[in-house]
Length: 333
Image 1 (cartoon, rainbow, N blue to C red):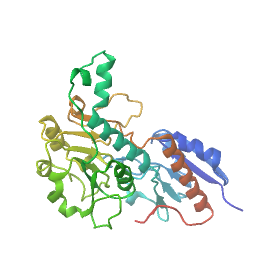
Image 2: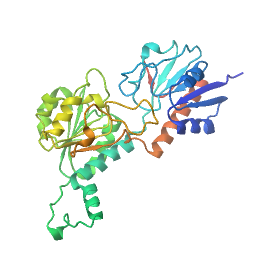
Image 3: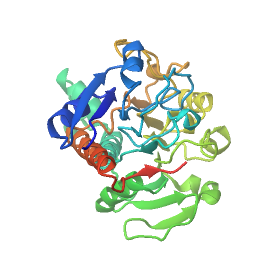
Image 4: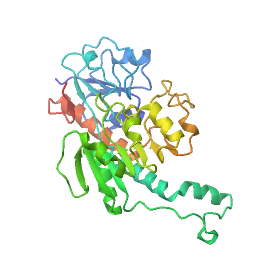
């Protein structure tokens, strides 16, 4: 007789609802918004936990999180790609860990949309014209905007996200360089494949630097004052990876003092632990007061279709675990 799986989903209720509706095994799905005492009680006898953090806080894992003594736990499945919120020392024996991707399409579209906005200054123009201000018009001889075509783009990390960005950029005939830890074979969407050790040789050519790499000991503070000073004065840094890949103080001062052109930032240095808190500074510095920064609250991947794709893969992995089949995206540690 097949067992009955207890599944606890923490954080994303849409995934819990999807699993309740679509799982084709004997199961009970429970949902917790946060890792509170109720969550800790629920996971004690769980077979599967879907969460971005286990034993430490997510997005860099700077905080310590309580975890219960779990005896039955067979799978920790992150509902996202990052595993920097998993304390592997706290994972019980024989418990597997899997992650999901499926976010490359909305993140690439986010990057392209913001790059196009940066070149055209479209949001500013819309806001001015809503005030009936015609100063941007060609009839008023307003300042002409720039174009994305022909710009030089550096993509740091050429995995799923980096490749999707390069695929979209190809239409704009940009000069696109992919920087990776180990040199990868050049494809038709990039002009050069370059090992990261040579990053500073090319940095002065780049109009945009897009960070798509994971956060680890080699990439923490990868962007700092020593290489920021080598960038074009008009260069724009885009971060859709993890906040700490850019040195917090160096980046703030570079923007504040107009050492570079600006930034487009979706991932941050601090996150609210209380999900109900509406106002929360994502840094100890006042990034939100800068005029040369587009900032969003970790929303680039958050599309309706991405959630469905991720939920579908998590469902498939839970069913494969149940039937002792191979799991997708298993993390070996």
